Length: 501
Image (tube, rainbow, N blue to C red; front, side, top):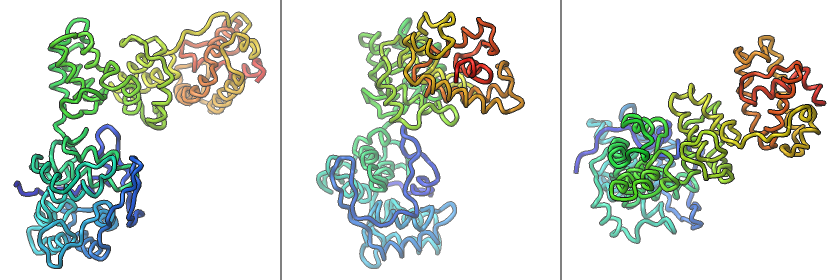
C-alpha cells in the first residue's frame, strides 16, 4: 500500500473552517467544551451506545502528539480536540502496553515519541487520528468507526468480517484526511464525525458506506455534464448559449453539488449527467428538462433547486431566509406550474431563474436579483388588482374595501413609515430622489421590511397609494422604482398624516 503523506490532520481541517460536508455548508464540530460521553441518540431514533476511549491512555497520547507533532505535522488543532476524538468521537482502544502497531492509543503514543527523534512527518501521521495505515490498517480504522458509530437504521455492516471484505475493494491511495473522492481515507474522515454531535450520524454514516454516499464516491464533473448535454440536447431543448456558459452555470452560478456518478435523482451534477445521456437515446424533451439548470423537478424537486440557489447565492445582507428549513417551508406554498424560463409569473420557476442569476457576479448581481427571487419579489408575483385607485386608495379604509389587504394592513404600513423616517433623520437623505446614495441605503432596509408587508398582503395598497398621491400632486413624489421604495416614500413624512397614521 502507498505510504501515508504528510498532511494537516482531518481534525485540524474540521475546526479551521474547511467544509467537510459537500452541499450542506461548514460543520460546527464540538470544541473544548465537549467532554466524554457514553451514549448518543441518532436521528434514526435508535440509542447508540458507544464505547469511550480509555481516559488515562488518551490523556497520555494527547499530551505526546500535541506537543511533538506541531506546525506542518500537526494532527490536532488542540489537546482538547484530541481528547474528544480519542475518548468520544472515535473511542480509540487503549491497546497493549508497548504496542507499535494496531489501532490503539498506545501505538499512537509510541509513534508520537518516535517522531521526536526523527522522521517526524512519517511518524506524526502514524500517530494521527487515522493511524496512517500503521496504527491499524486503513481498513482496521475504517471498520472500527463504521461498526461503532453507525448502528440501528444507519448500520453499514453486520460484522467486522463483512466490513473488512468491503473495505478491501476500496481505493486506499488517497491522503489521510481526504474530504471527498472515492477512497477509504475519505470514508474514515466522514465516519469520524458521526458521533461528534447528536444527529451527525444521519449525515456522515451514508458517506462512509461502501458506495460512498454523496461525497466519498467517484463524483460527477461539470465538464462531462456539459459535453453530454450539448451533444444530446439541441434546438429548443438547450437553454445554454454554449459549453462555456453551461460550465459557468454548473460550477459558478448555481454551484450544483457533484453527486456520485450514476445517481438518477437529486439536485446534483451526477443526476443531470445521467439524464443528459438518456436524452441521446429517447424522449429528449423530457430528459433535457431533467438535465437542465432547474432539474425539471427530477434532478431535485423545484423547492430543492430554489432553496439551494437562494442559500448559496443570496447571503449576508442579501439573505432571503435564515436557514434551509425556512426556505423550504415558504417554497411549499408557492405555485409550481410556471414555465421554466418565466420571469414574471408568481411561481417557484420564476424565482429559480432570479436566484440563479444572483450568482453571476457576486454581490453586484445579488443586490438586484435576490430581491426578485424572494417570496415577495416584485417580478414573481400576481399582477396588482384593479379598482383600487382614483381616490379610493387615499385612506386605509378605502383600500381595505378593495379586498387586497388584510386586517392589519395599517400596522404594516405604519412599520414601513417608521423605518423610513429613521433613514430620513440623516440630513443627507433626499427621499424624493432615488438616485442619492442615502436613498440606496434606505431602500435596502425597506426591502427587507417588506417581507412583513407582503405577509400582510398590502402590495396592492402600496401601489395604489403611490399612484393616487402622484395623480393628486401630493407632497410624495412617485419615482420610477420598485413599488417597495415608492411606497416607503409615500408613507413617510407629511404623507403619513394624510393617511391617518
